[in-house]
Length: 164
Image (cartoon, rainbow, N blue to C red):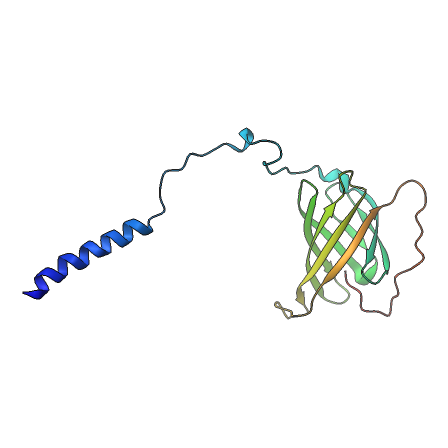
């Protein structure tokens, strides 16, 4: 007899729990083009990345990047390559690869409003066969080279382990 009262109560409790957990409430969708410019994600014109850049790592070593109109390119250190994933607003994200030492990872750069320079951060995604490396990445500064020559007092020292 007690089972007769427990079964409906248990069923009612389950229905109430499922109903309370259901997040399928109707939401008003807003088209992205109706958002204010400051809130809408902006896919930038990747051509602002094209050209020659000076890459200065956190210890002051310098390398030079040459990027195409899509923001992809090469650098000398360990046969390195940059590949752009996104450019939204002033934020550039992508991947780097170094064929010579069998490593790759990701990066993000926050550019100045005129895209003349930016502060970046990089990390490892793979070192050799290790796809979950614990080795940390680092930071860097990018500066777009202008028509005048930009020379750095600190050339990249080839014997140091500096990435990317």
